[in-house]
Image (tube, rainbow, N blue to C red; front, side):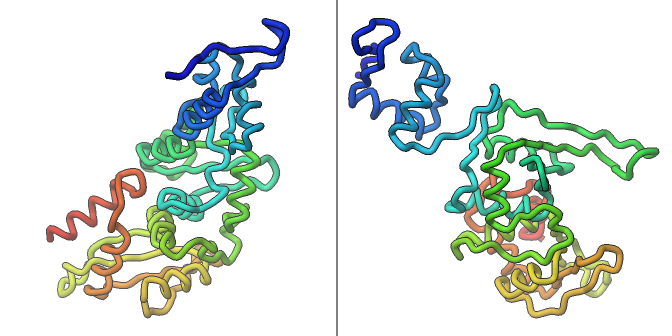
Length: 282
């Protein structure tokens, strides 16, 4: 059992703390398992900064804790999980990366999905903003939810992975991540800038159409990865924006099965996943 008693060098109150090997191992292990520095400080009856200094000395990557607003500031340092790849895709589609103040934001009409993003970032103290429809001021038909965070590390890491400021004016690419995570990135992008619906044609009314919207190069790369052999359609209302879609029955089934295979609630948009479930039961 761990001894939480703190021993100091020379001075009982002001001397340098002498951490035992067991205490160091406990702090490092607990922190990596999700215990906050504030909670670890409480257990050892020391300040938050004391725990932070110890972790730094042990060369442990430390998540941010800025003025009472914690967040996982190293979350995008590496794209080494399905969850990270998924949310990178969502941010490619619907995220905003600031040019000058290290702010990133994500806005959607699905509140529960913004809450998932908040949990993913560990940003539990950050407030989710809500915009209520006002016909005189905007074209919203339902509530719009958004989460914004200012963090240099997250901001710079997103740019490193290709999620640039003013990305709507750029020709984007699938980021250089491990191939086994690309399908998760594409599902995230699909949840932001994609969709599916049934054909209105009476003859093919049971045909599900799947579509993606975005820059030409990115859609070409998605088409190649998903084996969609069709021409892109130019969006005449939005500059540099194209549409990739197909209604080929076997191909659509293959694509949606790939998108949702091995997923869980944290890395899919419930509203679109329900369409997939209904499609399977059709």
